[in-house]
Image (cartoon, rainbow, N blue to C red; front, side, top):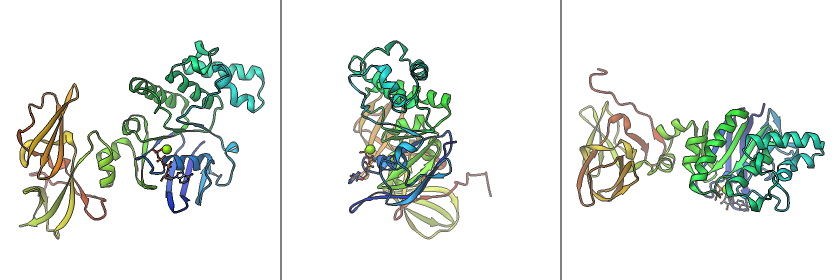
Length: 362
Ligand SMILES: Nc1ncnc2c1ncn2[C@@H]1O[C@H](COP(=O)(O)OP(=O)(O)OP(=O)(O)O)[C@@H](O)[C@H]1O
Ligand SMILES: [Mg+2]
């Protein structure tokens, strides 16, 4: 078992609170991704789990045992960093076997174990080479091998793919996902790259300024972002966010934004409220609604993104190529009611509402 329970973990550096009362339960066998912008506290939290950064307050338990004050070497964890820090003068074989030699294991055991790991990672042919004779991706796999050879309870990884070029990163991403499935071990993986998070994670924990914004499966955080921050972080381009006002007229709710009034298909009287209206670029369609002007169209190959200006707000529309739009075109955009996200303007938190579709309910 390698469940990791983080309980109100806090780390301050002088006046900076790098990690602010984060509570997170990483289940055995999960691939949990810590995601967020630069400086949000991802690496600090990972180093706290590893025991490399002492907590200011809070607790960490591994497999049910309190390890808050346990030194790193006594935690059953292996860490892979962005800089692989391979030993340049050692061969691939000796680099991978290093943690076992350091633990005084027998030569025979080391040879067998290194052989197995090299086989898994496709490094069997390269065991005699030194790091400088390897490509970036191969070096990355050696670093991974050095973690794997120990058979740890959990793997902690801090942006391990960020030194790779785009193509290699995509390939290694898929390899890591397969590896996780084969090993069934717990992975905690730090990245600021939402594509890595969306494609590899079983759950994503989104951090913002040291605080946890949302924890959920990739589908949950993408489809039901808990806050304006999450909505504006995920997606490429991210969710369109517009200031709007929610008003009731004659028992029907309307969203008033940028000189239009959109009926919300929701019956009821509510006090007028300032909200943020969120619509994903792929959910905007031509139709009666927001009036704007196309400023620029980007060709992504299979899709296009039209950047539009609605009032003074920038809004992106994404769809299969060709969108048949060009700079200067006037557009009117709308979306289906179930694709409208609403957030409270002051707190930034998601407002829960369900459209009542015509005819579906009285
Ligand atoms: N040793 C330290 N001393 C002082 N401040 C620190 C220290 N380590 C981190 N910080 C601060 O804590 C905050 C969180 O840093 P952290 O390295 O965890 O961010 P991160 O999310 O990993 O960012 P990045 O994506 O850039 O790696 C930052 O404001 C950083 O400047
Ligand atoms: Mg970092």
